[in-house]
Image (tube, protein in one colour):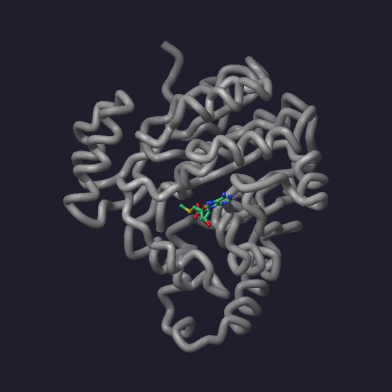
Length: 292
Ligand SMILES: C[S@@+](CC[C@H](N)C(=O)[O-])C[C@H]1O[C@@H](n2cnc3c(N)ncnc32)[C@H](O)[C@@H]1O
């Protein structure tokens, strides 16, 4: 899986798993590479969502899962299940021989029976891969789903209408940082609602251009006070060397983090200045640094 959709060279590309008719190959690839980003990031996203709901009095917030792929971020946002449990599910040999239609039917039933977090969410999935968003819609993760590339052009009328009602944008995988044109088009369609934007780029993928786009739309970006966390294992020494160089170039101290064999990520929050208060006061922000 590429963590850099523009194809810049420092991560290895696993794009062949992105557009299969069901999620098996994607989740098995995540499992094989020891992905942990979504586990940590979604815990912070949920804490941010709580703060946003309190600040705006929302009882049924609407979310955009940006660059959603098969919807793992939505799955963890909405359901009481861990990433490790999700990935373990697809190790079962019964998934080896199932047809895509059988996988979709099983997953739809499984998700329908999973306990849900409060509050209820309305989720719009957006990705350039038609099969991935179709899977997310078919199994019930996405209430609406769009396969569109906002790097290349304006949103369709349907997507624009959905974006106009979004309260929070969540994204794991760095697209929001690496594709400022797409981010700009998303936020233009969201205005004047000014949704919060929560992302978990790997260290080195945060970009000034994205912060400028966010600022133009009235959002101030900050790094949440959460310790950097594992994104996934490096799959080669070369990839590790490139990641360390990239993180160092962005000003990060990689000792004990990227040097230990894993990409590390952080959570960025962009919101109207001060709305929702100091994240260190949020009751449910995991591992938050305490006030000095
Ligand atoms: C690293 S994956 C992350 C997927 C998912 N968010 C997750 O956490 O597993 C990056 C995703 O970005 C999608 N992508 C690439 N370019 C995009 C664009 N212009 N607009 C929306 N999604 C894009 C890819 O198809 C892929 O699903």
